[in-house]
Image 1 (cartoon, protein in one colour):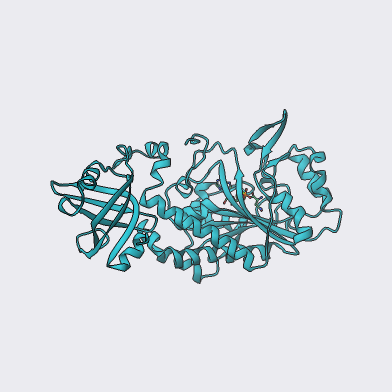
Image 2 (image 1 turned 120 degrees about the vertical axis):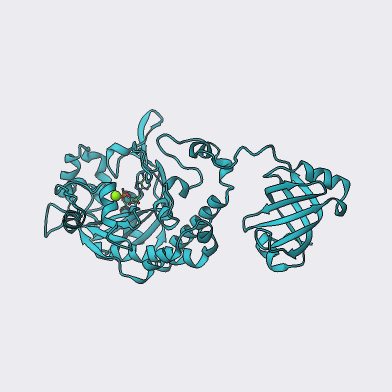
Length: 430
Ligand code: 4AD
Ligand code: MG
């Protein structure tokens, strides 16, 4: 008989052969209940002393939680069992006995993070990791469907892209180099051959903040396109979020249920156009509706984003931020030169910025000025400035924090649970 997974077994309702790990065990005198889990589900099994060999009974008695086993038996409906059925064991083969599993009920978050390599077996994290897999698939599908090529940038970079304060310096044969904060600058070179490109890759930020939304290593879905303006990019970003949410709603119903995520809250996203407000309007709304006065020119902090998104039930775009607080490559807004043609997409339910994007400056002089102002050596960016000298075209792009999207979709308390092995300033093991 071939092995089938637990979900298939639950449909089979006959003789089955499964394999997996012991999720719970309860031993009685002549009876041992083992709940088995695999990547699909859990199922109760029962080992009766009189139905198995002496060796099997001895082994069953030595089984502790997380032992790996192969089981053959008869599936019977049993309303009391966790998933409504029970396997009456005919053959038991222990593949790997487990020591006493260190993770018990009610353990501290720190303990669970220290034991992350074991805690990822939990049903909650398993569900989140499945949703994560769907999110990655959806991103690839969306860009490919829209005619985007996948293209890659180096991770060792000689300069910053998103400001010097969050750069990780590495020793590159005795010379300083940095871990990439963004795929973007190199992508801006590649659009002259491929025109529409995207990538999902890790980005690195030396974030000193211990917030629930910052990682030092996160997965960044970025796109860049020639002949696209900022409005085209906003539309592309809205389509991307809708496609991701729809795919998760279609493919992860069970997982959303398991993590107790209210799917209705996500469905709203699919049916409405996302509002677009300017930075100026955002300040106005915060003052009038939330009694928060922010000085023009200041960036929106986490708390202000949280208050702003309370006014919406879908993601919202905030455009035209002040030039001074934004990256050197963003295009100046001709209608108000103190602002740039950029947008942030803020997710509802308190999640805040999930996407940042802009049209790119094409005026070499303006880029040079802004680099100097930020204390950068223009010489280091010569190759980048070349891109404006040989057939420059209007172009735009954006970057989405994949863990931030996952955290919102799964309504996680902390971004750390959106990735198997999170990296933050204080958390880098295991
Ligand atoms: O807003 P950011 O810094 O924009 C860029 O990097 C641009 N170069 C993107 C582009 O236009 N190609 O970062 C983009 C997104 C943010 O909106 C946020 O979702 C995510 O990356 N992000 C982080 N996610 C987790 N941890 C961090 N420390 C993050 N920093 C940014
Ligand atoms: Mg940003």
